Image (tube, rainbow, N blue to C red; front, side, top):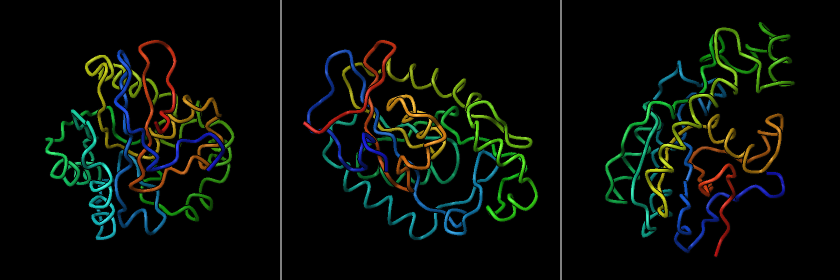
Length: 216
């Protein structure tokens, strides 16, 4: 994890400031695709495995008692299952937001890293060098992800000024948000510590600037 990244679990104790919306960005629990190191995006819909369900239970324990007013989730199964477990502990019904779904990995969906490197070495190198504007074969770029994720998050922020909400989503969207919050390039996204069932607190201040929440 790079310096300055909000630490998973290092969540502010105080409510958000007036006019600010605090997002607790949650990555779903583990699936078998995660365990096997397979590319898992919008075109993959595996359920949580046993470890993933236990991770979600532990995350629900961490979030219990916080002033969360709403719980939103990606439509994909692994996120929805995580959100249901959280909602049972928080007393909230998960609300589906389609824009929170993962990046589309196109032809790489379900393949291991070794398979991708063997079949698409040049495309992979191009993607790693410029993930913002490089599409995977048949898939999305981070720029395209941003075109759908930011309007959705800003709409939620306007709906919940002065409140704290949970959004259960995926590695791609969370890394995109952290890139903007930290002012770090997406080429460093693997250093942000976005593992399964981690949570990051960020705030929309009501202006152009998003910030990382700090423990108070």
